[in-house]
Image (cartoon, rainbow, N blue to C red):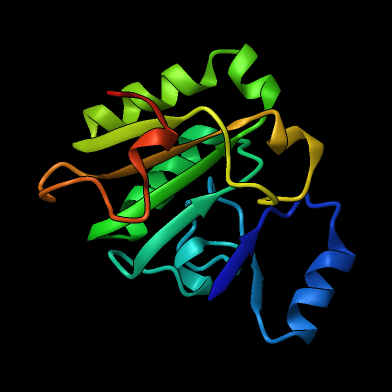
Length: 152
């Protein structure tokens, strides 16, 4: 597992804990275009079509993050995006749904997240988007129908 955090992070102690427990944490900026920059996603190990699952939490710079997620996701990969209450109020969910649909993804919107993930108040009042490429035959098995508010 490889975690990539923004350069603007305020959770350095959490990242240090993750490293001590065996997780890889790298710092990168999704909008970095310079291929030689140490903050370029490819330089931290996120090459094209290299990941089965991509998660985006605390979505900022959403256009750049979604572009990177689509680039690194394998053809049959799964994309998970958690949205905070403010994201929902500002209409970010609808924008992301349209973008993913344009890119050939099937998406569903979950009106709640699984209990305890992540462990912040904002997410407990937020939601999750799950997306997969339209060429897959069906909704991934980890999603039960009672979790789905609507399909897009």
